[in-house]
Each structure stands twice: as structure tokens, then as C-alpha cells.
Length: 484
Image 1 (cartoon, helix red, strand yellow):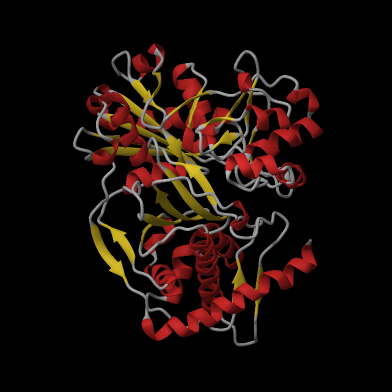
Image 2 (cartoon, one colour):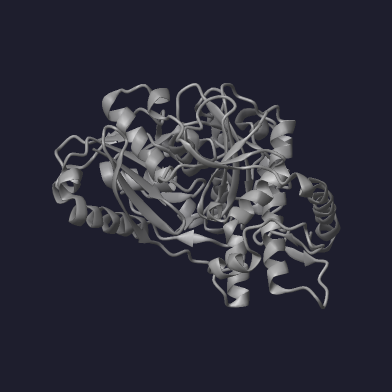
């Protein structure tokens, strides 16, 4: 058996698979996000270990014999988080999360140094790790002075699981400290933020061993000694491993809290000025590109809170049959935007409201706004040299056939829905645990799922969608001048 642990923004998911990659069982435990100030987003790492104990404890209660047979564990987690560790492995302050934008000034200052884009292949975004450390140095110098290690969230879990300070390439590529082409820490970029390689974890590939489970945890969970922990992956690369998006030309769109358009690459193809992320993949000698939007299902959840209806109820009002855009446009920049704008200060808007605008029209506009943001990411990936001809849909928002039809029509390409099964980050992490423990061929293990259904573009609405996208594109510069 092999265990995948996915540390998500809202909870930990634990998944057990067998040697044939059949899912034996899964369990989740919730985690809250703290927002003590506007633009801030933090979590207490103690909540991560608590939630992991709860999730694995649930599996032990329901699948104890299977859990006892675990030979490998894979880790996945939300990226970019700054988990600051003292000399005694104590946590120095709450982890600053990926969607925290407080360090926008520090990010701009680092990004103005041409070495960062040249070495990492990426813009220094406010959500990345390096500017967060610069913010801590500027605003909490007493904390900065005590930093012995900087760990990404899933790698703090690894520290708790194994006692080791280890990370891997895909997650570390999102720090602004990694030489992404060479797949190693850049001492030059670390020095630019007054840090050194001694304060970074050791690096392995996602498919390699990155520690073993501590004896006391193995005993508590009923496992045998020596369980291998894989390097693992950042959440999007782990999802790609779960989806089999590991070879050139494969792509997926994720409608989760944030939205991602992810394409696997057989070579390193940076184009930072497009605000596309060019990161290492979890498999050796493989890279990927991502367009990232900060609010996908989070935009619908916001609309849900405002209207007092559940996201499911709002979606039901819109129905399953795709409509032409109504003329109401929603900009989903509720916490800023990454691709293609790299703008932490921009905020969302409804445009084109009228007396006759209904709640369903607003819901439709929210879905379309997220769709058009994903189209922005597609255009950015194209400009960076990536060719995408079809995508597979994953994430909670992919349960909406309306949303998928909207995406297929706006992107003008088929959207595949995988056959029943959970192919997300926890499954990808379990696959990496299997590879690390057995030495199996990564490409053979990370196969693509069967396609249950394909959503084709609605040809009759293509023209109206393109016109609505043009309106959407014109609105960002119009509202930016009022907010920056």
C-alpha cells in the first residue's frame, strides 16, 4: 500500500492506494485560514499536523490492515508558503500563505533585480516565498534573525513525519530562490534576500526518497519501520502526476480555490514577462508551465456568501445549457491577480448591471469571469511557446457542466472529463510514494485516466464568447487606473 498526503488550503486529504493504483480509502480533516489584516493569509503549522493525525487516524479506523501495509508515502501541498523554523525546529510565526499579498512592495523590489527573472524564469510574485522573507526582515526583524530553516508547507509536514529538512524541485521552483533550469538553489538569489543555502532544505527529485517515517509515528499508525517518504510535489505538479499530465502536450485546467491552466513540457521554456509560471515538474528532467488565477471557485464562494445561497443552488439557477454572455461582466480579482497581470492591488468588479439583471445573470457572469481569466492564461502560455489543443478538467468547479461548456467555448477546444475516480493531488502524491518506494518507471505509473465525457465548444456561441472576452480584456486597464 501507498499513502498520499495532500496539505490543501482548507484541509488535509489522506489517500491509500494499492500496488495496482486502486484507491482503497481516503479521509479528510479541515483547516482554517486566518486573515488578521486585509491582504494577509496565514495558517498555524500545528493545524497541519493535527489535521494529518485526524485524517490518518480516520483511515486507521476504517482501513487499518491496509494502512499497516504502507511502504511509501508521498507528500503534496499548497505552494509558496513561508514556514519559518528556529534552531530547535520550533515554528517562529504563523505560515504566510500563497494567497497573502502583503509583500507586494518587496516583490516589486526583488523583481526589479534582473537576476531573479534570469535565474528563476519567473516574475517575483507577492505570493512567492522570497518576498515574504524580505517582508519579515523589514517588519519582524527579531523573527528574521532567528530563522534557521525556511520550509514550504508540505516540507514542514515532512519535518514532522521524518525529522528531515528536505524539499523537492517542483515546490522549490515557486520560492524565487531556485535556479529552475539547473534544478538547484541559487546562492546568488538567496544572498539577495540575506539568506544562505544553509537555511534551505536539501533538494531531491519528487520521485526520489526524501526521508523515512519516524518510528514513533509508524508505531502509532500501525506501520512497519522504514516507510519511505517520497520527495513529493507542489499541489499542481502533484495533481499533474495524478492526472498523468507529465509528457509534452498534455494539459489540464483546475477549478479549485484558485484556477490553474497547467501544461507539461519536455524542456525548460521560461517567459517571465507573460506572468506564466515556468517551474520544475515532479519528474526528473521535466518542467511545466502554469497560468494561475487567484480566485476560481473562491469567486463563486464569495458570490454565495453575498447572496446567502449555496454554490450548488446558484449553479442550479443557471442550469446546464450554455447561454450567450448577458452583457454583465465580472472581473474575478478579489485578491489581486497573477497571470497575466501580476497585480496584487487590483480588485474585482461587476460591469454592466441594469434593473433587469437577475441573480442568475450575476452567477453566470461570475462563472464567465473565471472562464475569461483562464483564457488569459491560455493566451499567455501560447506566447511562451506552449501548444495546447485540449485540456482535462479537475477540481470542485469541474462538477458544473455549465462552467466546463463555458471554458470549452472560450478556449475553443475540447474539455475532457476523466472517468470516475479521484485523480487529484493526494492521488498524485500516492503515486510518487509508490515510485520512491519501488523504483517503478515514473511515466508508466503516472498514466492518464480514461475519459468519461468530452465537452465540445458550443459553435453557435463562439462569436459571442469571443466578443465578451474582448470586453473583459478591455476592462482591466480601465479599473487599474482607479486602484493603483
